[in-house]
Each structure stands twice: as structure tokens, then as C-alpha cells.
Length: 294
Image 1 (spheres, helix red, strand yellow):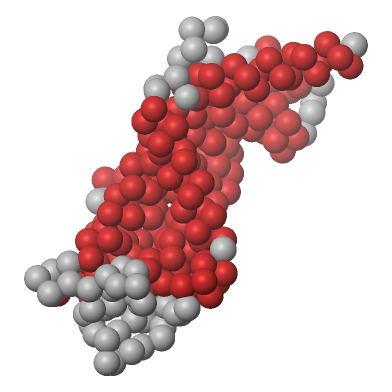
Image 2 (cartoon, one colour; image 1 turned 120 degrees about the horizontal axis):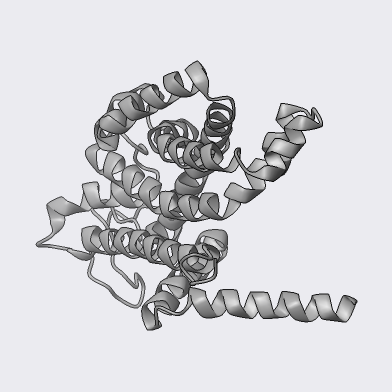
């Protein structure tokens, strides 16, 4: 019996990865890019030790230097090593994106779950407020609130989380609205099972696949928002080596040393596109309707 379960589990995992990578080489490249940036973020201190420069170290005798054996990607306007700042920028951007998405998912899922399950006036009020939030462009909304947190990474993560929270509320609310009419939920109500238990035991697990996909795609959205806010001067405050800050500081020197602005911009583009494409592939792998298996 245990061997049968093991074979079934192995087969399910193989099928998942086969569908996940079914889009071809583009998914494999994007998945590899994400793994690479995660490793860079995790081992940033070790990488900077190997480089020989930290993200804050200034060398005023080597400002805006071209790539060389000493500074592999050159230096910025105050002599800081571009590669070292890019490495730590990966840590800042990924941390902000993941923190934003985690707290938005926790709060948004709970609100959507309760509103969808209980319905009535609660559902009407929650969804009208959610619609109002969705109507406001995220960049405008976050710009207004980010001025209150003054470049703090945790505070900025909370602000960005608020802007992406409506996607979780609407998604979970719609799923719960249909799932709560299923026989197993009706049966649980008939035996007077606690509403809180019904929501967590019967409804939440059936929303998990869609939540994971939404989370993956929202990480990319959060990274883009953080980079945009930092570029505009209302996000992560300098001298923190965030990619958006690097683009903002380096665009003035596109003629003298274009790599200072171009490289962090390329990093932002690669990470955001990779999250979106991997999110699409994850949806294909986790949604049985898209695999043709109802």
C-alpha cells in the first residue's frame, strides 16, 4: 500500500513538472533566473567578500570608472562598486516583494474568506471597498502612503501589500462563493460544525492552488512597485542599494557610465518577467481545468 502511494506521489510530481515546463525553453530560462537571483540574495555577503568591495564602500579616486579587473562592472558617481550594489539590490528587492505579498495574502485571504462565506451585508461592504481600491492606480496609491513611511523597508512592504491585497480578496471571495454550496460544506453545517473550522478545513484548502499562483505573480508586481517608488524618490531611501535607487542615481550618467543605470534596470526587468512567466506556468500545472483534467 505504501509503495502504491509512493508511486502515485512520484507520478503526480513528474506530471506537475512536465506541465510546468511545457511552455518550452522560456519557462526553464525564467525559472533559472529566479533561482539565480534568490541565491545571489541569500549569499550576498559572501559574494561581496569575493568581489572585495561592499555596497557602501566609496572610492572617490575611482568615480564613474568603466569595468575593469578591479571593479568588474565599474563604479558609480561616488566610487561605489556597481556589482556589489547590484548583489545587495537583489536582496532588498526580493525581500520587499516577498514581505509585501506575504502580508497581503494573509490579510486579503482572511477578509475574502469571511466575506464570501457569511455573505450578506458583510460581503457587500467588503467588495464595494475592494472595488474602490482596485479603481485607484497602484502607483498613485502607494506614492501617497509611502511618503508616511520615509524609506523604511518594512513600512514600504506594508504599503505595497495594501495595494495588492484587493487581488486576494476578490479571488478568494469568488471561489468561496461557489465552494460553500458544495455538499461537503452543507453537510458540515448540518452537523453544526463551527463556521471557523468549516472555513479553514473545507474551504481554504480548495483555494490553495489559485492563491499560490496569485502570490507568485504578485511578488513580481510588488518588486516593480518598489523599484518605481525608489526611482521616484519615495521608496527605499538612499544609500540603500535598491535597484530603483540605483536607476534613479545613475540615469544622469548614461553618457559617461551607462552600466550604473542600465544594469539595475535589466535586473528589474528580468525578475519581474520571470515571476510572471513562472506564475503562468504554475497556474497551468496546478489548475486541472487547464490540463484538460476535470
